[in-house]
Length: 272
Length: 203
Image (cartoon, rainbow over all chains, first blue to last red; front, top):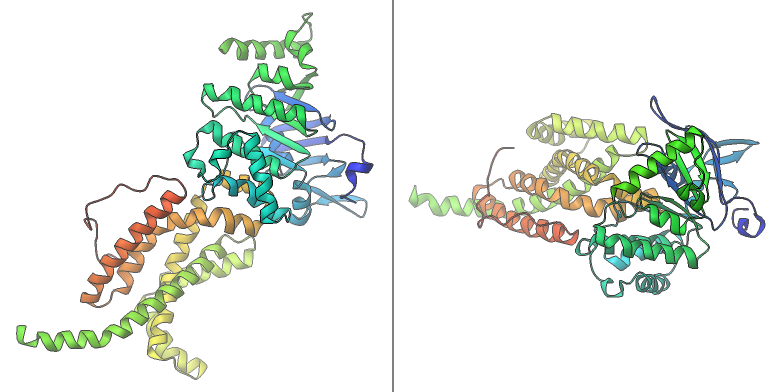
């Protein structure tokens, strides 16, 4: 059933169905509903603490949902069908579900005990059952694509932040995800390294049919690559629009939500 | 005193083989039990956590001499056979220091940043792969500094042997530590003067 979903499934790639996430007393996401179509590039913007990163972490199964259901490729992500009901998924289901999803982190999270190539090949070998040779061939191609062919045998600690993030991108792509989650991937980089990484991501977005969900404060990048931008504030989507509409704001709207977006964009864009 | 030196030295030499075997056997058993106990205390299963915790508390909380006494004199009354003295010694060394080592292993594993667990989940590793391919290789480097003195202090029983062993273990552990640190890309600890920090005693 899960093997053929790409042929038979035409619905949204990601679907949040009344998702609630609480940390103790604190409600981070409240009754969240949204869809992302296959191949779409969606950027989440909003102030810190508005729940953007939590959405990515829920999708990567790094956090558990409090209520509601997330569907990826039409199948419940962290639940199982059992007697017409949804029950919490076991590790086996989670490992199957995670095959569709990759994530690039703000702090790269490369494995310091493995060389660069090993960082990229270990996961395909261990969890997709690729042969070492096959994985290394693909890994070398990916390293070439991110412009780091000469760093195959380096340790992550010998690379600059920008280079580490490129390796992390290659590592995520090596798993051939349907969905790629980008969690503030340039926030930890020196300003001069940001452009290169964003350029690479733009190229990947344009040349593959991967579905992207991206949290970023790089508004120009968001505007360039996104098919849709969602503005978050305190756990709610307060605007969901094409970037041109959201960023240019042609006719000032009396809507208070829109006012909040404008305020946020002003604050972020004036900074530079 | 000086005329007895030959006698003293030869009786020390007589015990040397036994000491070496007890030391090597004890270290081997310590390492195995330390990893078993340390990982056991971090298990997903409550029963395993409890079992490991009870083992650690019992063997850390009672003295080594009492444990030796029990294993060698009391256990035979319960099970009907007596262990060879050397094996009894190895068993007690291993059980006792394995319990201390268990805390070192647990602490080292927990000191690996959460981001590494999350990176490993994003790579879709199984829980066992996460532990053995990502977390433990990094944790082992953290274990080196506390394990070194533990092994050194505990197993050198005879004075002469103790000194040689202490020096050797210090050198080897320092080398392992800095090699390990280099491997995961951390700055090795600053080099101290040759053996300047070697200390004995203080269990």
